[in-house]
Image (cartoon, rainbow, N blue to C red; front, side):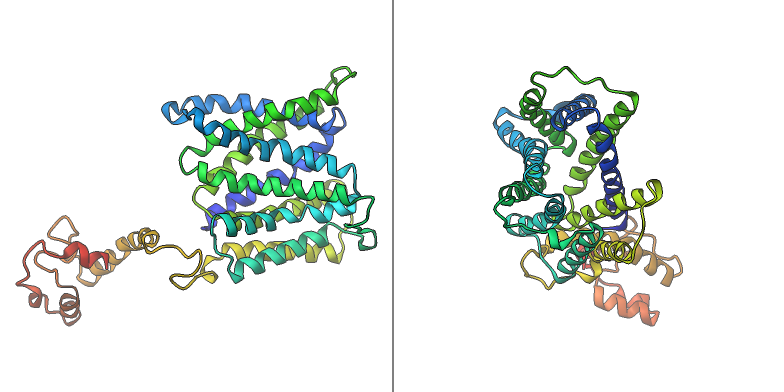
Length: 378
């Protein structure tokens, strides 16, 4: 993962981190399932024109609809239903501790189902980030009671909601290799909204439709446009060419954003645990992003195949050609004028030795056009 991709992931989690404030404002004016359905419905309407512009690429056969419906069920229905139901049956302290599980579950699912490597730097980054989130959560451990009879079912539902959210990322990985990520997330969002709608209707039974203020609409639009359209589309776009396990570590930035918003806008106090937690999260993200610390020996579980390493070599070739031209004082004119090493220069080892000794003529005699591409690829 390069630093540009990491920067986009940071931005996405900054957007999602601020959603806690927007969600709190929205919940003051409508119940949770209704808020989610309105948010997702607006996002679906906004995304459909973007999908239609793709023409034939947006066409997905009926045989794949169940798979898209399953992704929508995981990410936009079960995640919200299970989490809300679980939170009504357990304590806020237990919920805060269990919500930390999502990045870890994504990493574990990716290791099992996608055969992504679970390397020491990734494991260290995950552990550091999770420890930082726990410190930021300001959990009162005297109130933690995960297996107590009165709250065990609520805890289980919250944990299952995190498992559904994690599986949403894993299940989408295969589909976005066959179809554009924007198309996949749009179909999944529509299916998820339809499946969530009955819960909203049940929630509103016997009640008048809520009257939403301008402040409430601002919160809803933030959730719909930035958190859903931008956030989920960006997540799947990056997921297409990156490891889900690496991306998961960045989710730990969301609680940090929430704490920072509380400090700057609500004037909440900062203590040593807040600072230490923030530093651990940043360290965990850095360990995940610094890929040079995460190299594997060939043939290791999840190690990239040789064929996948070729693009990296190809990116280095122009620099190599530049060095050769610099060494020869501009006498080498490139591949299109007799090959990389000039006319007749095709024996790799002999020619390199001749260049170093300043004896270009020693490379004459090779048949023009033979072996130059292979030598260049090596």
